[in-house]
Length: 127
Image (cartoon, rainbow, N blue to C red; front, side, top):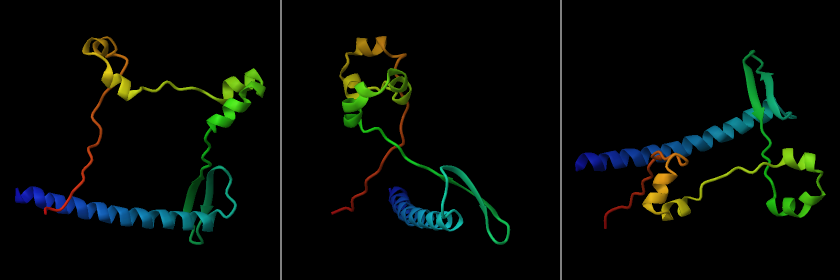
């Protein structure tokens, strides 16, 4: 049992180190990108340091559909544009899946792919 407690301490320390390093990495990446690409274009930008190190940085623009606004305006958008602009992707309602009877799940078994996810841990000190 002492081994498991040592592993928990080691895991907790690794999580703390990862949080610190992730923050440092993100800050350095943003600073390097801003220095090399002060006016980036969307997509891949290529630059070089004074010593000749080539750096490629990808400038990303995140876009998301405002569903309420889309629903309000979609009738005014030409059909040929509407069809290519917005796509609807079927997603599984996991709660409804869990509520199915065993025979219903068996019938739909080939429709739903299941695989284990990465476990999570929460550690609380003993009282």
